[in-house]
Length: 449
Image (cartoon, rainbow, N blue to C red; front, side):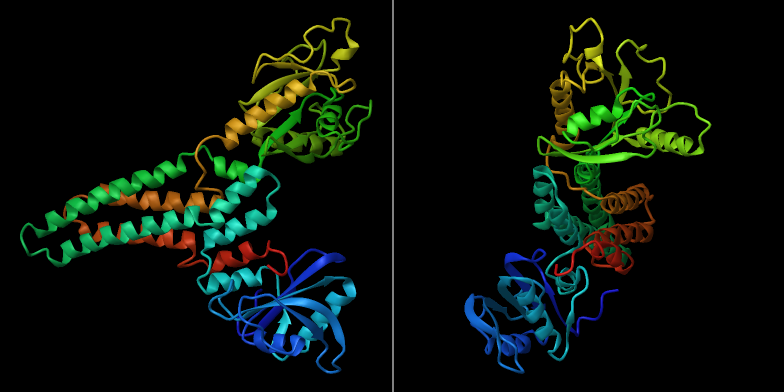
């Protein structure tokens, strides 16, 4: 639980020591006093100054450092903020943090507390906070670009524009209610309001009709490798990722649990799942592995159905694996006919491969990369990147649908529908009713951010 903002917080905001440079941040009402104690003075605001950082009680030098001073509210958190850039040795960092802990009113920051204060002080809305979290966690170039767009307000600014349009439409409707005894005045006000509501409903619906590209990019395209036991699934996974990520054994049923490996294919995130061989078994552990394999394959965006060369194409493929299934023939180096290796009939066709020699793997990888780009990276930047975004926008669209369906004479109900839609958009950016989700969002931040 994040503590009240009356405290002054401090934390190491850079990577684990040892390092060339370590950044220690301080934010809160006692930040200036903390900087005076360590640096001897407050430097000129927003200008890096070289000082000797000392232990206040003894005057002993801890390090030479660059310090910066950002008086609130013109700081990242909106509070008085100090930053010390010291040498990144463990003893130096420990000395600085120990000294800060001795300043009255100062305490170590909790995870995400600096960002939480920026949110509380109006420096970031909730969609920007989520964009910052995604930027920190980005593994691929495409994820980085998407997160940076949201940190810069791609969704937050759009949502605020939508909310203002709703408020204006709501004002027209309520004016019509107030002047209901003025003859044709309500009709003159209601027409423009309904036109605005219809256009707004179309804009939000268009943002939702994106094939969930934003969520896919954030979470990665999920590709499950499935098939009967001993078909070469784990060998195929290891060959694709170029390391021994999964145990390979000639004994059927070796893979019991799902092995996950994350890849960057053409800048797009892809998660490969190596699953247990699908077969009937009396072993309760293997039965659980098969159940998990079926569930993960059914939920995957794409399934690579693996079977040995010479096996019947689909005889052993169970139902319920989803529509996106590619067939991958393995161990083609063991058969007499070596023709056709590395060829494929295109997505959904047959890929012939050999994990031992690597033949056909390049063609399969190229097809996977093209599929990832088509499903995740194509089109305009996605506005919706989280389940929370989608649920709130769908709620707003439902309220607008009810508003547009209200019959004449029920303007009070129309106004209430608009109020509910505006309230939903307010929750999207964190203006109302978000206390229940703040801890969930900020708990995933690192200490010092």
